[in-house]
Length: 190
Image (cartoon, rainbow, N blue to C red):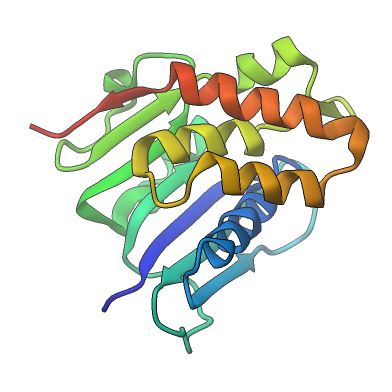
């Protein structure tokens, strides 16, 4: 069976790598035998594009490279969509989960993919989810990811967040995830 493959795109400091790891850990807790989370970035600076890959499979996984053909692409910053290669590797019929404040039809996305969109930046700014002045949207995007794919459930991701984050940040991250889950817009391809 082919692993379920996810690519995460964001900018340094937004939490794309952490989100990839949270999904992998959650999948493992849900009983998947094979899970990987692999980061990919150049110069480690806030604001530069970064990506990560997550693979999930009921069977052990022996591949640790970056994902080449994704079932899901999660974009934490809609401006990354201006790079054509961002969604080139998305399988036809796959899910594009994007943090966007505007209607996704204005983003020029191809019509053979499903789209889940949420203004995660607004959700996180409203909740005050900032680190060093930067809005961190990864947990909000986890809510949109769960809503679109249902690959892992919210209760398991909540358990991982509780174990991974400090006590004073757990509540705000869970609130961001749940709020984004509720307001994510799903547009299935016709």
